[in-house]
Amino acid sequence: MPTYRDEAVVLRTHKLGEADRIVTMLSRRNGKIRAVAKGVRRTSSKFGSRLEPFMVADVQLYQGRSLDIVQQAESLGAYGADIAVDYERFTAASAMVETADRLNEAEATSEQYLLLVGGLRSLSRGEHAARSILDSYLLRVMALSGWAPALEDCARCGAPGPHSHFGPQMGGTVCSDCAPAGSPRISASTLALLRALMGGDWATVDAAAPGDLAAASGTVAAYVQYQLERGIRSLEHVTSISSDRQGVR
Image 1 (cartoon, rainbow, N blue to C red):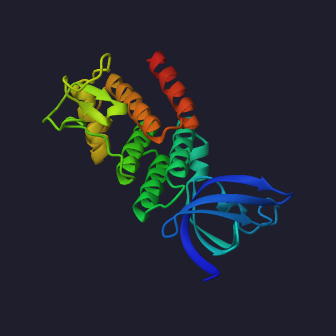
Image 2 (image 1 turned 90 degrees about the horizontal axis):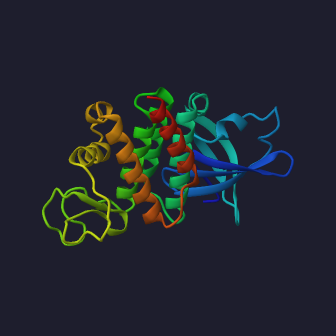
């Protein structure tokens, strides 16, 4: 059908001409969509604010040859304003949508869409620390994409764990026999925190020590960027903010 409707979260936008925008969205049923929103940069636009990054909308689109065209947009989740007022939330949300954009260049599942929407909603409400929401999202979306890290048994030989080495290039925790020379060690408490982040055990995450939170964040960032084979630029800003806050404590 030339015209279709879907739920979508806005990942990024680019200016086009004097009044239009190219909007990149992750949709619930049609994967990643790139579409032209005509006239949205005019003050008279009826749905310009509904097509900003981190917003969730019910959109009607017309299929084009290279880019679709947005015909209608109704707000489903106005998360952008609450995220933009807090720098930690903003940088975490930026890393989340950038990761979603990188992962879904071919196809996306409804689970990936729902996971991103849930993460942005949690960020906007300030339900947990922004970095913890980001780390949980990254671990879960990697698992949904087929890159779940091994957090118990050895990622290489399958030896029962837990193990005290973690190698992003090895796929997760590895036993002492499989660990490459110089591979970093991971504490039992940090490993338990990673499992809590993966499983959504927020009581454990919220009670974790700052050192474990920092170690878990570094481990997640290294793993994700190695598996994607390209850096997530937004993560650099998240890491610098977290480091600065820890230095003040």
